Length: 198
Image (cartoon, rainbow, N blue to C red; front, side, top):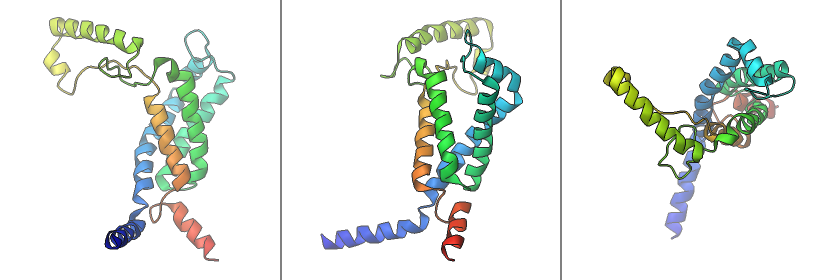
């Protein structure tokens, strides 16, 4: 048994040299997703402000110009900082807040699933209704469209727009808040090492 414990400890010790890969992969995954989200808000600023502010068909948020600016800036600039691994823990906080706001204001009423999948145990009434709509759309396309060509890149789905992605990104950012940018793989690591050595 003591041999197994020693082998386990040696294995853990060896992992310390590559432990920066975990936060690096989280950062590399999140950066393009969040950068695109921020870019889209900036590129369509007026439309996004209208959607944020309108209570009838939008989110009905107060001060929509400020809210869009904060969300877009947090996502776009935050994604660049994540990519570099610079101020990772600090930038994770407003990005986590942005994900929670998105989950609660945009996605909550749709349930968990991002893509409507009626066979999922997480399917709600909205998702189950989407199955009928998808079947009708497929029927129309099979009769009046080039269905094989239309589905050659993948199956048609209906976006449910639930909290799945926003909460997943929140959890990933929470992990980065706890772990930091990563040993050997982030600017944070080298900045910290330089100042700690003095």
